[in-house]
Amino acid sequence: MVEWKISDGLTDYEEALAFMEARATAIAKGEAEECVWLLEHPPLYTAGSSASPEDLRDPDRFPVYETRRGGQYTYHGPGQRVVYVMLDLTKRGRDVRCFVRDLEAWVIATLGEFGLTGHIRDGRVGVWIERPDRPKTASGLMAEDKIAAIGVRLRKWVSFHGISINVEPDLSHFDGIVPCGITEFGVTSLVDLGLPVGMDDLDVALRRQFDEVMEARRDHVCDQAG
Image (cartoon, rainbow, N blue to C red):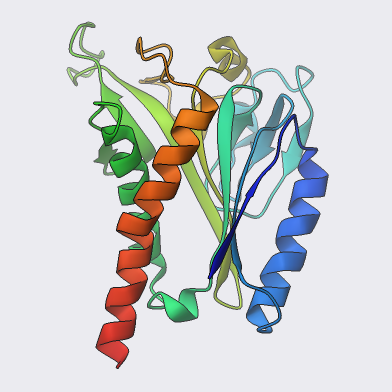
């Protein structure tokens, strides 16, 4: 069983971190169920384990939190759905790369419910949307915007941190960092792309596609083990 938590309002980042760490420990001990937590944070920046100091362009703009998740700098704030995944990889194959690919596939399948085609790019973490209506980049690549970020940490094969999907955040807040260390491409959201999607709509799609992608993967692993 996976517990689903949905928090209204804005959740303090340190409160969320404390919950995730405690829950991951309990899951590893067999004392709690896996958990997916959907929430929003007040405006803040987080620095992953690969963050470069020069990518924090405006250090006084919002609180900055050091975190041991993978990745570089990320913005969280109102209008962005944060999805924290506390999942037991001992039941999901103990393959970190495969787990991240499954998270990417989950996001892409969720976006597909709204008619969007998400893409994964080598060397660029997250999920991207092609923008053929815009000029190509300076290096001649098609213009693309990032719509979802992914960064996880494992403790005793239990994941925490997770995914953020832009529904309707203030995109100017990303200007205070170099998101994920990438300067050549931009950031977008569901509403920025012209889709009248609310947080509740996204939550329904996330839940449905979790069963289709993540739980199907776990069932496959269990079938192989059996």
